[in-house]
Length: 144
Image (cartoon, rainbow, N blue to C red):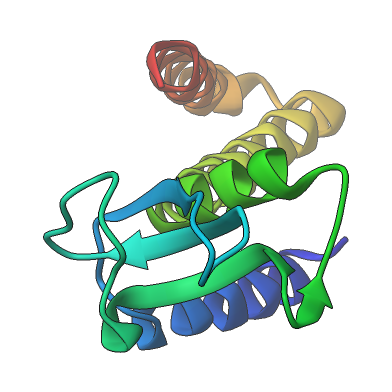
């Protein structure tokens, strides 16, 4: 994937995350006659074990009556949705940092190759400086 395509995709994903409720999101369920074992993701301040207000519900992954969402993976799906609230923006930031480091490293390595290929005696200092830049970038990548 090109750097531009990756950047566009990450920005679209980040925009979706920013447009959603800021959270925090958490998973809970209700086991009563009204909810019939509903599993849901709720936002904001919420007292687990109590029925949430409608404006607190982000997603329902199990609702047996009416049968709108019935699944074997209801709790795992709800946990994933809740975790994605904070996880997606963090992943977007990490992808952007790694893409930037990769692009910078590629440019430094292009200079190394160009300098070495030219085999001009006066360019040995440029080569040393470029190699040091490559080492610094690799070190930064190792730390992140």
